[in-house]
Image 1 (cartoon, rainbow, N blue to C red):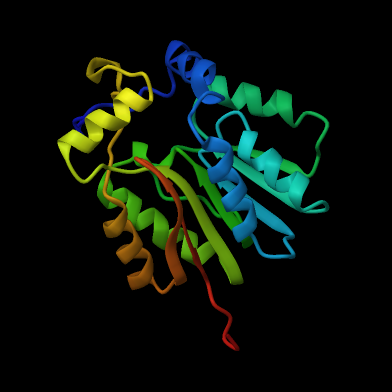
Image 2 (image 1 turned 135 degrees about the vertical axis):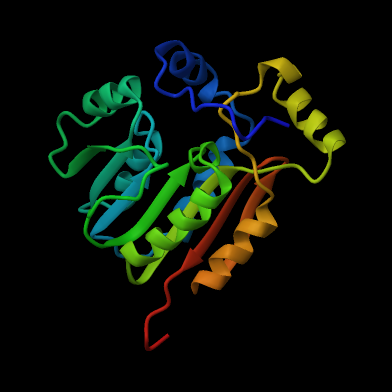
Amino acid sequence: MTDAAVTNEWQQPDHTAAYLQRADRIPHRAAGESTLLAQLPARIQRVLDLGAGDGRLLQLVLAERPGASGVAVDFSPPMLRLLAERFSAHPEVQIVEHDLEQPLPDLGRFDAVISSFAIHHVPHDRKRALYREVWNLLQEGGVFCNLEHVASPSARAHEQFLHAMNLLPGEEDPSNKLLDMETQLQWLREIGFADVDCYWKWRELALFSGAKQSVKG
């Protein structure tokens, strides 16, 4: 698996372009996104997208919850340009340049925090800290939905994933810092999230979620 010490390459235009060329061909991605949409609260006023990329997921969420406003966070210049293009006619969307390896700025409170194939690029201790920051940003009754790339349980399973993705071992993203899903689910439970579970999974791709239960709940 990929060395966790490798520098994140998502600020490089070539790296970003290569990802976008294959993004729509990620197997079963639409199923994971549909499951994420089904996890959202019925009413959303504000949604935060961590590592928003080109805005694909945030656009899906805003279409599913008309009237909501969004905040898209990313640190890649190519992605920030694509976000600006996608949401140029959408004043309800705020774009924030920020590196997820650093503590989140004061962004206000949200009914949903989402992320798609982004958080696995930060070190493991930062993942855990980021999940706690998400908890603090959520309104009571809000949810955190992370469509994520997680570690396989074995080298053989990882090889099978690469084969299914039509990737050779040397073609893996050097920015990957993969972690098993069970560890991350346990972190969410320890922070205080309720209804924590994996709601969709295909090999190393998974949608896991947790809710910030209301006092009455």
